[in-house]
Image (cartoon, rainbow, N blue to C red; front, side, top):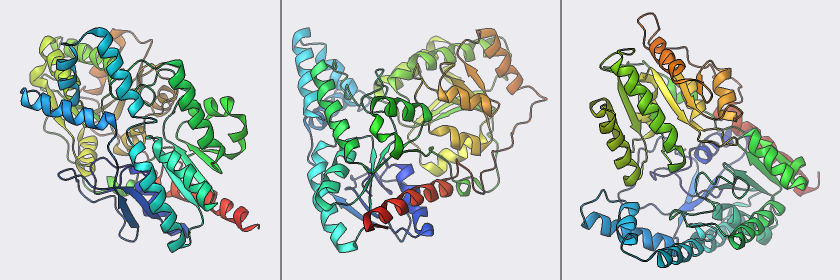
Length: 447
């Protein structure tokens, strides 16, 4: 199993970690290849299964990584919030516009296909050795970052083993590029040449994959339309939740709470700003309790964090706004279960099925989603009784918030029961992956 991060690293792939935890129940023993731990960036080891063998390899820094480290140091020295974006903005503002564009392009091409390009040779080398040592029967690689999937394709060519490529998000086909798989962290202009190069890498990876997983039916449909040969070997496995993470007594927050748990991206900002404005209006009209708190817990870049806090001041809700930054998964679960309303921001993207939906459902709080009406996020939130803000008027949103916090509304909803076989249950999903691996192994053996 090739993944970009694995516990106890702070930035790990929960989907891959849960697959590794439960695959042994279905007869598959995972051997994980991932990157080395960074000093000072570890979290609670809740996701790591004790019987999983984990090999951590080095990673050569790309130009983008080196530049980000430099800008982060410059931003810190200048008294900013220790983000690369802060230092980048400060330095780029002093440069000629043409030079800035050229610099961004150099940094972007240095990260091809992404910042994990420098991990590929080490992943393939370690993977090849482990395939022989463990007599492996199949390969699994998860992206983004899609350098991991490329490494999986190369390892499949070298070893002859079948590869399961897990596309947790779109690589090149989503033109909005919500998480920067095309434009990179420095947000450079995506040229036609870059599109052609990345599309060729994507096509090659898919051609050398015996099976392809998707987390959204819309993304799966998008890819099978563009690459018809993968239709018969494509599969849908949602990002689910583990009911075992949500057991125990639920302790309500001291104050009524609206929470967003997870990363906040630039593409979500217009919806985040709209929510803050609507929340401020509901608060000023006393449609919701005066002590209601809004919590944004998770990874947020310094520039976006500053913008979030400044907007809170502008709307007069700074005292009601909490931005604690990164929290561990157990802390995130506690917050989700203690909240009255949980927020989703899907941007204008119709393809993304936000992975936090499953855990929100397991937590049992009401969901308020900002999404396009035809998106998979909107469809699923409506299915489970949440509110979707797309064509809804501001008055309707205010009324929904008021009803969510009314004295007659229960502080806790009933969590979605996914204890048994269920498409959103992590154990069930591991069983689905095991079934795919079983079929590929049988084909390999000629059965």
